[in-house]
Length: 420
Image (cartoon, rainbow, N blue to C red; front, side):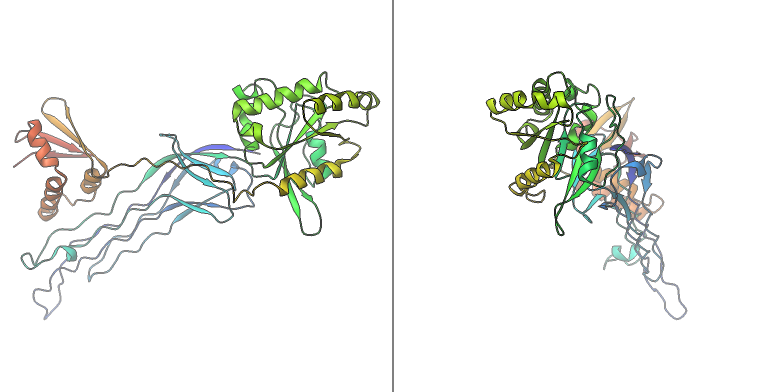
């Protein structure tokens, strides 16, 4: 089954906890702190595999969670870092943050990778908090919390040549005649419900990929029929073969309407080079109207050729015209990739809100991460968290906002009591 859109949940692994531990060995008095660091949590990575051509793998599995890092050990032993979670996607996959609609990546090359969620770093053991004034620190860090995202995947097929036209123009038949593809073919509207890919051999060393895009109708750019679902697949193609239905009521009107729909969906689609082919010349009445259609197209400044996809008449000539045009176009690597926008934010920013009666909530990525990494059962770790509050300016801001001793302060999922 061809699937070209999917929504999934991904989460990196949590960092392993650092530990509080002191060396305890016979004949080694005052061994000092030897708590080890936790291991790093696994990253979530998307990687392109060219043998994939659909997002069907995400149809039944929609939750992907990387492993957590392991806890540190005594004698300064590091916890084991977790393996990264690699998720394979087909070439042409766009990756969006489904909550913000931000484009995170555009993966087009085999083996290309994108780290979508970095694993949490391991927490530091109490060895790191020893100094000349404090020889026995009961302070350590828990592992950094994971990064979670709701992801939307969209697939845009990567093909050299796209076949476009109204339903029943003969695109699937032409694809079958030119390549090894075997799409379903029938004499009724919207026979092609999914895009089909085929490879056409030019010579012993060269081949091109063709995509048969489902038929477009008036209103496709607004989502009418099947248009809105598949117009995006044309965006990847470099040259278009525009197939006219010789048995249609008005091939010229069909030609104008299709081009109008392309431009409405994406102005750049209307600028793509097109090879116009008048199909079904094996039918006598179609052959009779060819000269009239040809003259009309030439009068509008377009060049067209006549073919029969079913009888395979002049289809090789059509293909070579498209290949010649293709050689004049930039490759996919040379075309500027889709822009990926990054919103510049200060990770140390915070926000203070008054909630309920006398309660306060402090929000901010840095302070919430620090709270999640604090061992609240160790006084030394609590003091360190207070220093972080002071360093970020949160304590001062709360005082200026009117906080009083005994008030409750919420940071992430933690509930704290304010004290000087």
